[in-house]
Length: 348
Ligand SMILES: NC(=O)c1ccc[n+]([C@@H]2O[C@H](COP(=O)([O-])OP(=O)(O)OC[C@H]3O[C@@H](n4cnc5c(N)ncnc54)[C@H](OP(=O)(O)O)[C@@H]3O)[C@@H](O)[C@H]2O)c1
Image (cartoon, rainbow, N blue to C red; front, top):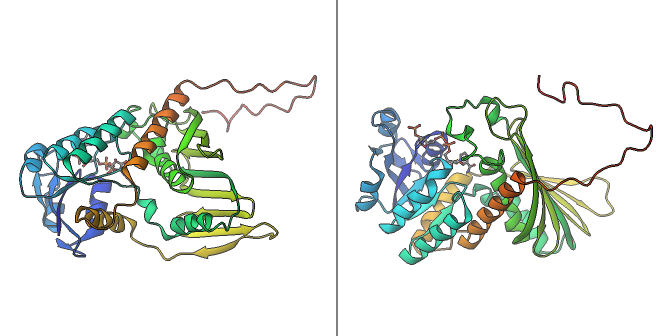
């Protein structure tokens, strides 16, 4: 059984542990969480005692020891790279939450250090484990949608409405281009899974409704290397939304939230909807990681895809910071639509 340390016991770190452990016992025989790396001793005593975790504050010392085989990183984005490098230096396997790293050069160096050390790095793109997404890919591969022409996705949520400036996520270095590192990167990974490498992007990202200094509304036009177009949008100041739609010459298919797949063939007025049973995608991704560490089936997100996803994220961030001018629309004489720049279109 793979002996893992959870690094970061915030919201997601606990969710990852809980997906594989119940009252201190592993749910299966793939992996067990034995240690937790925390910033301040004492803060998570009750939780660690419930899940039989030994809490430590010294990450370096733990990865140097023989007490664990792997680390599971659920820490702020800017910490992932250094934590990966420390782990590979001591031949520990790594499951890292998204985004893999901040910056494609770091992603490439992290991947190379794992390859040199002969350890596994698995990036937590949990949506890869959704049966509905896998079915969407199978439909594309089987030609059910015909020739694919376009894809679009939106992943949004209300999270940033509650941010305060003291929170790490409210810092633009951790959350550049608004929701990209928290949510949009999942859509990027799904697009890469469905359509292959992305050749270029054109992004716009703006913020006007939050009390903290990060963007709230980000949208990106993209072109895949194979020539098809795509766009993604990610908003962190609205209600939750997850949607991924693929268009082809024989029809379109749409993943609506995690478990609903619509398929509308050309010639039909209405889509046929299939609802999939929920699966624990966090347990599935961690068990897949453990299997890959044992030398079994490779983890489904390849290192090439993971590095490419961060290169796409970099390009989105850079493009958003230097937006290309919009092609202008000429006013036609006296034919002006009435202005809509008063509330609710501008912040109070
Ligand atoms: N795959 C998904 O769907 C998904 C969903 C949510 C999050 N995530 C990812 O999971 C990771 C953790 O996110 P989270 O939502 O769990 O964050 P969180 O609740 O804020 O937890 C962050 C953890 O990191 C620790 N930490 C270490 N250094 C820190 C610092 N300088 N500032 C603040 N915290 C620090 C915190 O320690 P303390 O406990 O001492 O504060 C806490 O344990 C991120 O990479 C995030 O993108 C993934």
